[in-house]
Image (tube, rainbow, N blue to C red; front, top):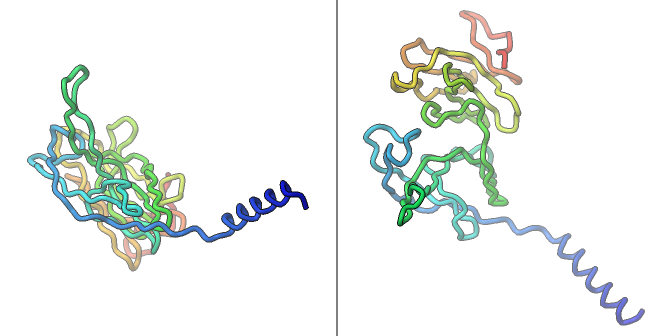
Length: 227
């Protein structure tokens, strides 16, 4: 074997060996909580009246900051969790002399503990001023808005499913009427979620393998909710 062929064989063997070697898992941890200034002036859609601070934590991947999150994360599996992101936004007007940084609540993230990858979750009908997401397993329950912004819907979304498991109109929506919906409440056996629209009676829905259905009085739900 010539010298060139030998070098080629050695290089190819090294490449194949590297490809066959198991990938080292990333180290994904949450940093210490800290408080940052926060108000409706910097985040009109998500900040509550009178709110002055936001508690945030860093997602650290191999010691480096990957994302910032706020609120409590929810473990979906033993290797993944969801959390609401927090973002530092430049609030300066065009032509301003200096940057003006403010914190905002961002979208929900799905984080893989093995790879450190953080993917933005697309929740249909989600509106930061209205939607308070409550998690159970890989289901997200929240009140969402129609594209027109005039109707309030009960929404249940399962991660990885392209359509909502449940989408049911609750009431008309008036942005000037105050909070539209409280945080949904889950129970585990049977799996059921209850929505609390403001000014209306609570609505409860039981989960079935493919959909969520309203329970009939004295009977188990049978019909699937329409998407």
